[in-house]
Length: 415
Image (cartoon, rainbow, N blue to C red; front, side):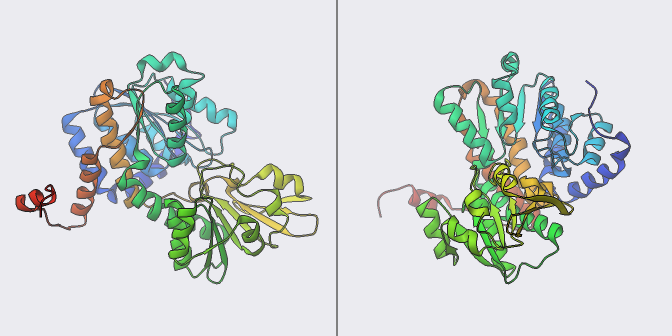
């Protein structure tokens, strides 16, 4: 099938981006060398729906190097980079995505990517899985299984598993230690602030930053805000996480109270309508809002638009909404993922770990799908450990190993 992209003439710029991340992703380079020799995906059709920027492109090329027949699409209309899509298409992969796609175009791109009749899918947020279980059920017999990249997608998969509607196994890559401890915390923590800072060009120090949600992503965002000199307020619904935030040195408030004092608001919950009409009514003039969750439902934009008497672009990726009392509320990146819609996403070295997990999990799925059942499965511990060992090796770090006597002691109940 022919790729559907904006402009093939952008390919050289995209190649430069891909080559830059390749130089900074030693784990994927190692797997590319290994897969080129072993050809684990030979004759296997793989469809990838992940934020289509340079790191994702390199993952696709690694799987293709392993013999896979790869089709690629985005997982968010604003995170696709057209030059990267062009580079992949120019290098022979089938790509269906462009930046700022309409909702209809985005869904059609997913549909075209699935027209490949994939055996393995790599999903980010669950849109491929959803389409396969609704509009493209005729493709289910071809599916061996897949891998899910993010928290939102795992939540959707778990719901399907509970109701018995999941029709093939999925590996929850997001739940691997080497994913959430590093990608969700350090990757999100840095990339969210990269996106905010490059978009606003405002200082963070001295401001009240409200982080809504204190999961691993929220922890990373709060930690980096503290490092930038902000006074950090956390809003949570989970008492354990709220207690953790207090002991980490942050203020914890209900959102109704935080809304009155916050300067910058960042949603990281995976839930909907966590900033809504009641909060818009009491926010400071000039308040800045952005979202770092997968879908653009955390900030209730329709309610803000209903309250606004004026709406205008303040700066690239900043939309201002003037309330009837004259206050301006500012929304970054249309409420979509600020680190990707207004930035380049997580650092390459972080995604090196996450995408090594994806590549190895896809290989594991290929070899084990027939005995996994229609369930959400954790990443095997040996894959998690292998990725950690590869990362340490890339840093030139060696660690100790237990002796046989120590192993015996740890496995015994006797003193």
